Image: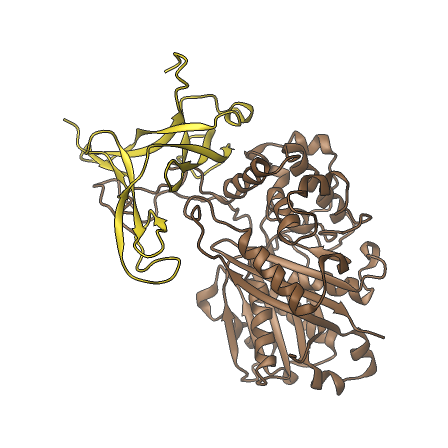
Amino acid sequence: MTDPVWLVGAAMTPFGRFPDQDLLDLGSTAALGALSDAAVSIRDVDVLAAGNVFQAASGVGQRLLQQIGQTGIPVFNVVNACATGATALRTAILAIRAGEADIALAVGMEQMGKLGLLPTSMDEGWSNETFEPAGRDGSVIDTGGILGAAAMPAVFATAGIEYAYQHGGVHFEQFAKVAEKNHAHSTLNPLAQYRKQFTYDEIHAAPMIAFPNNMLMCAPTGDGAAAAVIVSSERLASMSDDQQARAVKISASVLTSDPWSDAGEALPDFNTLTRNAAVAAYEQAGVSPSDLDLVELHDCFATAELLHYDNLMLCAPGEAGRFIDERHPWRDGSMPVNVSGGLLSKGHPIAATGIAGIYEIAMHLRGEAGERQITNASVGLAHVLGLGSSCGVHILERRAA
Amino acid sequence: MTARIPIVDYLVIDDGDPYLVAHEAEDSGALSFTRRNADPVNGTPGFIPRRLETTGTVRAFTVVHRDAPGIEVPYASVIVALDGGGVVRGRLTGTSRHPRNVATIKRVRLTTFVAGVDDHGTEAIAYAFEPEPTGDGDD
């Protein structure tokens, strides 16, 4: 049996748009916050795993250490699409499990501004001077939008409709209800990018992006960072009573990629790798979905959240529509999902998202989530999915008294 | 005669009616449209070209209202399971783009359209799908 790894510090910045700060300001705020929360110093940290997508080639982790303490520790810079933050955490966990570190720092940071999830240009790499086949499909122009919908809102919209085709009880209304829930939840989260509640009718009337995902069913992009300090069991035993009391057990840490599927080139399959990750995580943690007190899952679009109710086995197979209809994933329901407001309203600075989900779960397990606290939460699951594809699932547990 | 070139190399336009051709992995039978270096299922080498059917069944759709600059919206996009194998994405043309209508379209067939013209006047030919005639005189 693998010795457990423990989370002893966590922090995140508010998510939003902060043009007066740069990426390193955001990362520093989260990292120093997590170190302070853990009551340790950067001098105690043995390894840093730094996640970032949009400046990934710039040595982000080393640049971060230049701001918070250049102690000479090894740095792993990681990028894994929307699973980047979870991958940073998993990298840090692996370093501890390998016995090469006792204390590790994982940071996810991103500065996107108003960069959205739609493509900004159709001309990259192609020339209209003379059509010449290029790339692995021999394309002569950018095929995005021409050979069907390839932008993210549309890809996830199509996946939602595929689920609706396969299972009864799923229509536009069920997807809209997901958005209604998450926008409502975000009103209790002071770190959320948006904290505005919308009625079902207001959501129904929002401008359409890619049916069924409309404006209020798509996650905003923005700026933000999140960080976690984790330790080995041996190191935890040497920490103070208070540090030990607030420690959260990381019962499962799983990362998967997408296996071959016959439709994968037409529509990425983000169900199988999520289901594979969930099965492995439940087995690793020795818990079942019914043991969970709350879940933070990857609702980059409302359609995605509905699919993941099923993929994470929060509902019976094919019953995701009924699951939201019966309000199970609301914060006062039987299986609270995205009580932070989710990506839809809390925001989605890509590399920060994975650790922000861990932060949210940890706050509830410690009883430190303030107004949005889920009472007596003892087990939680955090899930992220990066298109391409990569899936991270972590299960956290409150430390036994 | 206007010069034409397929928008992707797996669309064949100069052999009678247009069709798609896939790389079929010799070992697993997996079909890919993009060039691969080994069987995507098990990593063994060897592919053979396979001509695919031009009719199929819609298994999902969306209607896009916002896309990259230069892409005309709205348009309907479908995922089609081709008869006999192969799953492909394309636009749905020749019918209303309203979701209530698109949801009723189950059977489709391959069609083509001009997607662009280069400075020499060469047309890039793209593929799409249109509702398959029902045989009730609506062809």
